[in-house]
Length: 393
Ligand code: SDX
Image 1 (cartoon, protein in one colour):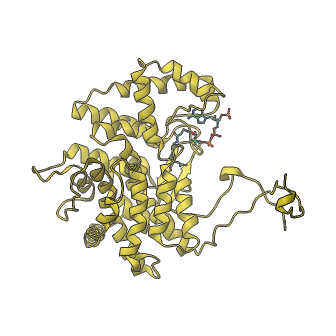
Image 2 (image 1 turned 180 degrees about the horizontal axis):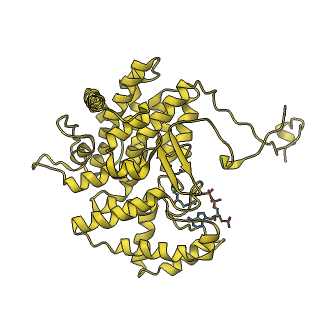
């Protein structure tokens, strides 16, 4: 090897790029988007303006956000032929697999958006993806229920559209509960970006070969699907439901999580960067109490989650490894209270993370980052001679 290769599996100590989008301080539990604290943005902002902030770098003026939303609305129709693609999937297909496939399929119907060559083309591609992604994300759910596929309503807001796209039936009028829209808006803000996490690194890696924005996001969706990453929000609910079904014996599951020979992990706990607490988990935990109280939902699962958290925070195994609840630990409890099915939880994460993926892909291309191509430490055979097939044992 020319020069020395530093082996760093999982890139635990590798900086892949410079970025001015998101700042994390894992020790202090700090998260900023473009210099604004996640606490302030979740409290005082809204998801569409946070999308604008992440993608274009500044909080939008009223005129800028109006223009952005108007431009997105130009592209909220999805080519009707995309329905033949979704019809090819069985109802039992996991929504993340369908979403990744449909996002890639969007390329065929939007060839000009594939690889934007200048700021204007990039702006068009961003607005197309922001508009169409929300629609196809909800189509995965509608398909699984055998419901007709809804269209974006250009007379209502982005997050309110998510609710009508998901739940409006042709048999009756539909108005989303404002408290639910507000809770979802906050959740999407909390998921919007997180510097060089697994799925964002995937988006940057794929984009570094000059594959297009849609193809790069499609790859990011597949990375997010994994239960160690965004798929954890679904795994957390399945874990909590299993504990509840087994009489709520949290201690037994704590022991399983600490048992080296047991592959079981306490899903929703631990983080590569946050070694204190995940600031998003704190906000989501509070929101869970508020949303369930507002909706009058008394979910025993929330009690089990809090019991697990309390046990872990006073358990040497977790404390010594600095394992705290992460963004995925409480989010599913809110989604469930909003009537969103468990297998759609990671799609919710993807909807929230879309602006972060777009912002990071844009930064990577504008910075003309080189194609990603890490090296390795070779541990295979030294040179050996070919063995004719009749001489092989
Ligand atoms: C997300 O990167 C991001 O920013 C991601 C994310 C984002 O916004 O993009 O924040 C979203 O992916 C949050 C994480 C969701 N995943 C989970 O909740 C799955 C459960 N957590 C783990 O699998 C784990 O904590 C990770 C994947 C989150 C982090 O893994 P690391 O940094 O590679 O840590 P590790 O696996 O090396 O664990 C260190 C030690 C090990 O024990 P020892 O070998 O030292 O004895 O902690 C143990 C692990 O066994 N451990 C756990 C545990 N997580 C780590 N033990 C029990 N339960 C857990 N959840």
